[in-house]
Length: 303
Image (cartoon, rainbow, N blue to C red; front, side, top):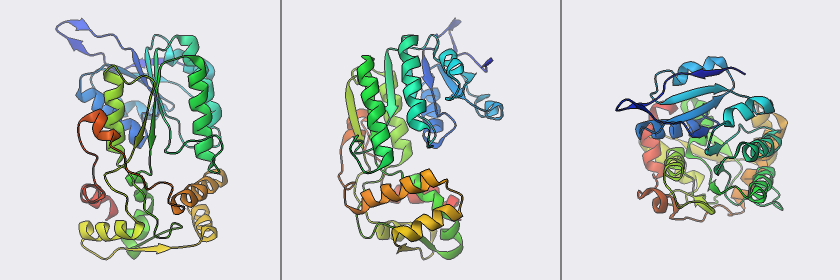
């Protein structure tokens, strides 16, 4: 596929060499990461699949855009050509494991010197949660290549609540199958900040960071904090897994992803995601955002 260069960072007449590839750049985390790196004047390359996304990065200084598709090995190889670092993030799909394993092989052939992979808290090849199994499999494949790596294992994203914004706005309610289990959910802006630091400073190779928010909270507490930010009543309603599965299908989730989310929520309901770590502050020097801060910042999105 054709390479499109939007802009190349110029500093005192000298062109800084682009040595960093960001995948998943049009997603929630990817966009935050790109913005963080651009804010630090770090030249980078982003891999996008659709020509329509070119305009997203057209005004960003120092960003080189390449067209690439995880299902097209030749385009991935071209995107990786000359890159020393790569941030690996694929869309959630039934082919994610296959796509990431293919990317890892291409990265090894391209001579990449550091892979930063977005994984998931509690990744384990024996997990009953399909997402956790596939992340663990890809992590092990990266280890086997000998490429220096850093694995980021975040907990449930606060921004995942945006999937409930319709019912929150119209009914003042949201639904899930989790009971009163606590989850140390994290703001994706903090995940991106961690990734930006790891990609721009040495000393993180070989590390696995478990990324959480500052406290573990229940979904009922989430509802109360949303209500405070929005200025109207918000109620969390616990529902059985079968009902949650039906609702996910109604709003268009493919079967594989809907089943995976049910497994995720069973994992949360077993209180397996309530631990709190200091890894965000350890890497960035700043504490992670609270859910209350997220609710205030994102209140317009729920209206």
